Image 1 (cartoon, rainbow, N blue to C red):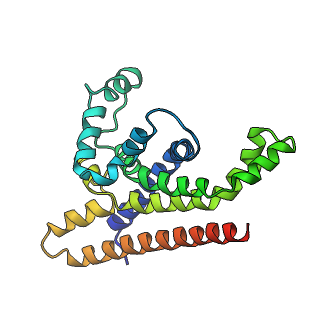
Image 2: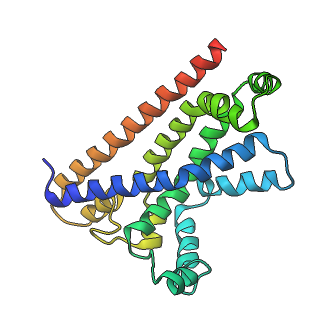
Length: 229
């Protein structure tokens, strides 16, 4: 059984991961749509920037976020002066770090799903008088939805496992930013806390495994739907 402190860590991890994905989902889908369907100058550069968090050290990403959201930073300064708010050392900052790290995986999965939609179905609907908006809501989105959901689930798995960017950006504050990976890291520094490490590691592995299985099931549904078409 988990202790009350460990339950708080799990709850905070789910809160951070869920908030990160819900806040990122519209932007991830919009970027995936642009990269899959649009043609514009700088598309290759945008693609590289979106996927940059996958290849740079997470500590670098956290450092950039810290510079951006610091009290004198380009985002932190207006956030503080206009709203009197700050995300440093708060769970909202942990959610921002998780969202940034999850975004590339979400965009990639959603982009592949959008690209897999048969454009001939959309063209046929337009020739029958459907507006672009109706084509999107009745054809494109339903056909790509399993891939969109798979990307969201995969991003959630990445969010709850985020460590480097989070600890660099918002530190390791119990009750505020201490998610599962940070709690495991802290427990590893404490003598005699091996049992706690095992419990928290088991929870982290179980949550990630469930998310990966759900993502794979949704991806298989996409492939089966395309095979039928």
